[in-house]
Image (tube, rainbow, N blue to C red; front, side):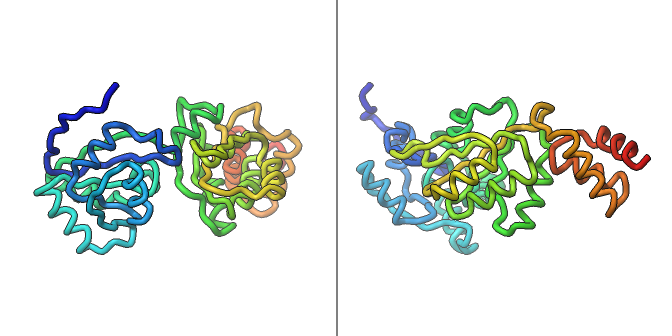
Length: 282
């Protein structure tokens, strides 16, 4: 189908435009038409977005807008939206998904400015489609913390969530995150989706400990999505492992606290572990 030549002007407002995460062929027709008609393009990095616009044959004014943008910069964009169409893009993928823009969209809506989303590629959805893990329920939790304790605390908090967990990750931190998952969620399938839609695309699944060893020997590069299968009976550690952990916890805390700690670590039922802890105490 040929591209439309009778492109009509856009109404004033904010247009959230998804861009490719790697393969330029994934850009939508509507995204190109919207970028072409906007008076200004707000972006994280003008160098990155400028390269994309050049590849698309578009020449639009750009204005930097990221998490460090000043209130004055946000006010200037809001004022522009009242008079003209303004596009918001991220460096790649769908804006606002672990990217800047939340405050800008919230303020625009509060002021009655029309906000329109131009859907397209998202690394989260792309990874879910490839991973072979349950997709009827999933939770996207952004980036795991960089510090070991904070990372472990987040994993313990999310271990019992009955859904596929999805995180963004970077190459230098991947092994540490996989090792933490192996400690906190032993037995659960993990998938590393890397360089999605690009030449060296990879989707590798298995036990977290095995993946940690692989990426220790083969350091990962590029953008990474890390997925963890939901908790389930088949994924639970052996009973003697659970008993050992309960005994260790009971030596330091109450029965209720011990059951809660082990339940969070493995995504198991707290009431069942409480009953088992009572048996071990007896």
